[in-house]
Length: 202
Image 1 (cartoon, one colour):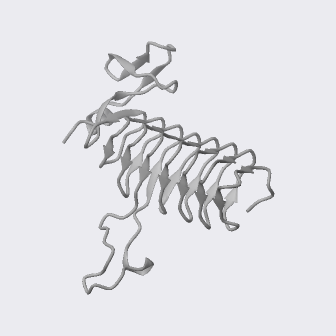
Image 2 (spheres, one colour):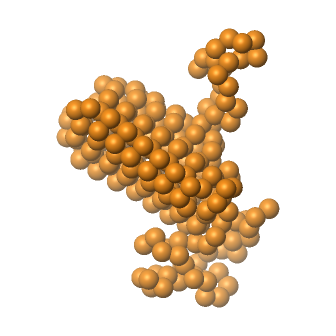
């Protein structure tokens, strides 16, 4: 770990082989595995689990009971609500076909990404290999089975695009063509017709 310019609660378990950024706070019963890299000014809530070699950018907030498994990267400013799970195995089994216990060599990790500024609501599950675009919003309890476009709002099981989000977190209203505006803060955006079409349910 780097010089302790960060806080670790006495009940937390942080590997000496993890790297923790300045100003980060790791709370009760959280666990950070070897090789993990956590940026500056992050918050890991009670019982959060960060697996080996996970990369987490600056200013991220992981609420209580979040699980981030090996293979996922979180860019800066990501929010994960309570109980969010980021998974990494597309074909999970405890044993091989011959009945022997699976080892690290017996499966392939699926890499996933949560883009900068994205938010994932409490209890949501992100399946292996998924990319959630920057500034996207994933509704609480959703099961995300396909990539989420930049600033898309998705919800449900399986999650489907329900709209697009402003940087302030509120939904955007479509004005005309590819122009969108936030009624809350007044920001406006251009979202390409190709991106809108690609986000439509198959």
